Every structure is written in structure tokens, then in C-alpha cells.
Image 1: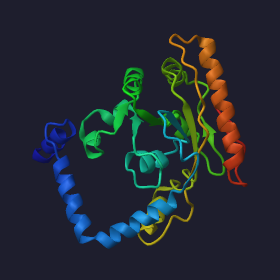
Image 2: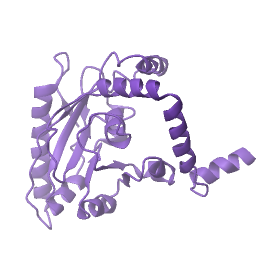
Image 3: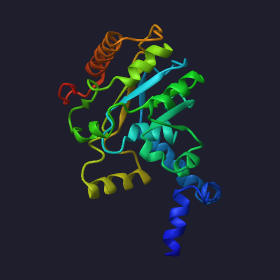
Image 4: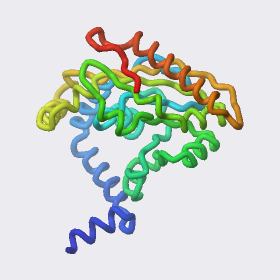
Length: 252
């Protein structure tokens, strides 16, 4: 009962253990400096980034696919363990992941909730954001040798982009599904990163920004037109960057 109580207090934020993690991080960093450096190098090489890496203006980065764990979003944006070119992004997470303060504190408050008001407020304050627009639904349809992008049912982010006049940058990653297939195979595969890069790298391609003219009160037609423009952009990016053995991009 005592253990359960401690866990509940941690999850509800009544006990702040983030300082403990920082201490452990410093101790491990001192004791295993070379090992950590090697693993860090392997992670960076396992998550190469290509494309529009010099864009530095305020933007909304939309990543596909979400896949099982959204590895690209986690390693590039949340953990900042790769050579992703921008370190100033705030990652949009589902509200379920932010029920407690534990995750935000561990990642230095770089997350915002996936609500309309939270995203709009972050953009108004001048922040750039990143998100996996397809969410868990996109993960359901993920497949090897192809990609499924859930876009047709999404409107909120396009409405916000129009209201704020913020460019959208499409981002596609390949290898997510291949690296999360089968629980035990996945564990075996990721243990190898201790000594080398992943057998199937997760390659991320940042597309060209979609410039947007600000419309304070966008209509349904304005939103539909922007969504159509976005669809054309990710289809073109997919055509230019997808591996030869991949099927055509499937839009849902």
C-alpha cells in the first residue's frame, strides 16, 4: 500500500522526483561518459535528417507517420538526441500524456497539450510547434513498406494555421514501423544500438514550408483548400523521398 501511495503521489505531482532524475543523469554521465557518448552517436546515425534543415522562422511541423511509438517525434523533438536542426520547438502531446506534471518536468516543459486553445496560445506567444497530426488512429493503419497518413478528418490545425498565418512544414519518416514490429524482436533490435546503429535506420525528411496568408476568421472552404495544399505537399515529398520498395502513400 505504501508503494502504491508513493506511485500515486509521483504521478499526481504531489512528489516531485525530477531533481532525482537530474542527479542520476549527472552521476551516470560521469561514470559512463564514453558509453553514453557511443550510444548517442549511434542514435544520431540511426535517425538521420534530410531536406529543409535551414528554415528558422516560426512554423508548425507536422510529422507522419505516428506509428506505434512516434519514434521520430520522440527522439528528434522531445528528447533532442539527434541532429534535428531546431531545438526551439514545443512538442504537442495528447492530453492523456499530460495528466500529471511528471513528463513535462522530465523534459524541461517542452510539451503542450493537443487542445485547440493550447496550440493557439503557444503560437500566439511566438513558439514553433511539432505534432503527429494522425495520432493513435494513424498508428492503427501503419504498415511495413508503405505509409498511411490520416489527414482527411483533420481541420483544427489548419484552422489555427490560417488564423495565425503560420507556415506548415510537412515531415515524413521512414522505418518507424519496421523498428517496432514484434515486441521481442523490437527489444532485441534496440539493444543493438548499444554497439552500433539500427539495422533499419529511421530516416526523416523535412519538406518545404507551406506559406500561409493570415485569415482571422477562416471559412470551411479556406480550411479545405489549405488541407488540399498540404496533401499535395506530402504526396510530392513522399514521391521524392520514399524508398523504392515502398507502396504509394495512402491518405485517410
